Length: 450
Image 1 (cartoon, rainbow, N blue to C red):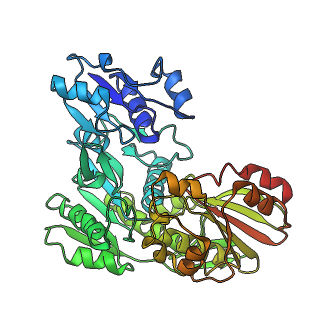
Image 2 (image 1 turned 120 degrees about the horizontal axis):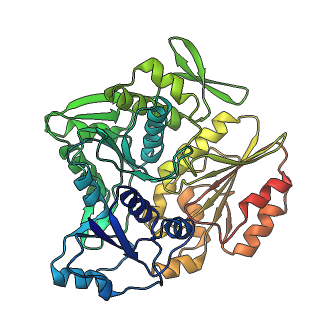
């Protein structure tokens, strides 16, 4: 089978290209820019385009399928040529569904926690040598790829993202998977550029629950009121399994999960991660892993990439990096760190970087999100606001939105860097939260000043 990728260099797209290459498919692709590590990984398999750009002459009638990435535009020259030839054009999630039609599809959805829960499930299955196909949105320790596809495996585990499928397919990705087994971890408004109202955003999760095949199941976080409303409002004939945060304790900076066999030490921490563990356990049990085997494996789970990732430590201080950027994720992450280290000064550095975080109305959703920490710092670049063609955001607006008068705000990368590196951090925990890079801040160099 011959497949062409339009925008092959994306994090998800290049992983899918590599997975299909491993299956023996003939893969070609194009992109206007490809960053590391995608560039090297594609080159090693002979899949890196000879030159960057869009080349409609690459598209001919011998191509069996075209996979279109979100990075491309709807007027992409290669896309237009494929449409002209009447080729079959798939979005990324649409093609994953085609690859899994005859498998049991396990889909993990939610505004937050879906990457971590998917990672937990895959960690447990790998620990017990249970082979499954999968797609997850982060690079996992012990896994070479973010996508793995075979003909023989019975299960496929998919992280169910609510963002759009492609430039010409405006359906949320997780609407296309038609799960047999599904999980819904939480609902908190996000992606305001695509879902301009809260009601519109929530309706996407209702559609996700309704897309579960008849006789399938939904495992859901009963501590989230919106999730409960969505589940109770669905008339889909499916089994419903609620879960909640299990009892746990913290002793000398280590979290222990309460089990019938006694306290189980964990590598991860935070109430939200304990809640994620409860959801992952339910899913693993539905996949044939009993409770004792789940606990044995989950104790060694150290987290998904960029999720409360420890990047520095001294005798008295620690540095964590987290992908948190939406209000609910920021609140959960900061609360987790303060609970884990109550005797240390917790300093949070949050970068506002996304379209939603610069929206005047959405900014109000951040109220109280940084209340748990001892010191709060917000960094953003006014140029980023201009690039997104949004109304100017002022420091005064941000202080008002977070409702924290001692909030420190930086809008210049150099000034922020001097502030971060010009201090003492004895008996402190530094928490950096962003989906960006703080204007090029070298986080690794911070290890030298602890």
